[in-house]
Length: 71
Image 1: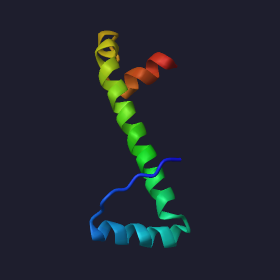
Image 2: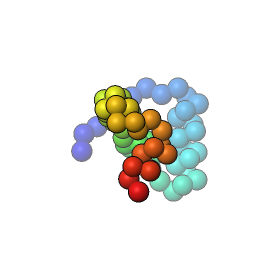
Image 3: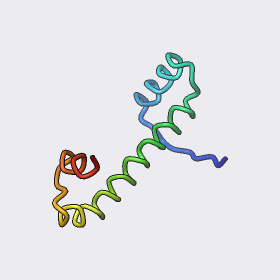
Image 4: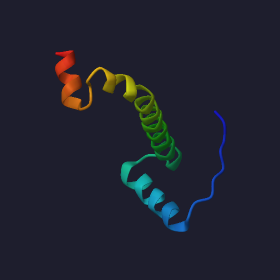
């Protein structure tokens, strides 16, 4: 596993430490989990932007349209 050094505002550092104690998790674990989620959301948004024109061309504009097509 690689090491990454970042600078945080003092308040964020304090909040992370407090959360760490409350959840009985290491600060590193909380940060890793948060970064994983952020990366996953960004990847999803990127994929969505790329396929949206194809979906719209098929008449799939809303979530409801997609659910109907899959049912």
